[in-house]
Image (cartoon, rainbow, N blue to C red; front, side):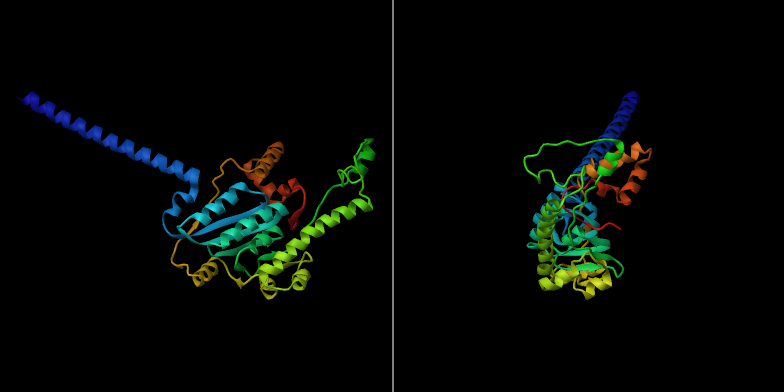
Length: 316
């Protein structure tokens, strides 16, 4: 009987151990699934579980960003998002990139109140995106403006002459593949490029006038490429208030959003990196720099060297 009692005790101990490890395995599996889901879906999985104010950061050089556009659409259709803060810190980028995000923000603003919170800088395409919101706040010393469009291209013809390199080409028409970096531009080529720039510039000035509630003449006077401090921008009606996130939330409250709601950042779900960051990393590695060194290159504006076509960007 004593042996049987010992067996029963051992079995109970074994059963308790098995139960412990089963529970532990279930908890670890659940934690793993939660971590994977958060990694894949970001705040759409976690922060979106309760009513909140969504915050989206738009930083660095602006290009066409399919992931950002999809994220803005998810925010628009999320019943848990009651208001949106766009945190902008950008010198601009391509006009197409700015236009696509501008249109996505206008679509979002048709369903939810959206406010822009300017950090250090919202210039060129960065300001274009800010103007798509219904309210803009910026710090007193933030940089705002640089409304305009440009095309930049190098002229390496002098270097080619020194190296003894001659370019020959056969074109279907005189303006094909113009402007070319391999020869100086002529009057006809510059006139063609200027028409291209002025058409996009006119559109940019038009949306500033429309969104900021000023006349076309007033917008045109501000769109000479000038940059303004937050205080100057307020005086020129380019922003609505001086402040930061607190003031942004306060404005959302005037639109019926509970100012006690948590502000949840909706982060990018793209983990592999974009083309430009990868290019920066490759350049950094070629120069013998670490990933941190590649980030320095980006901070210095080297990523803007890769922009093509019409750009709306401020170069400090």
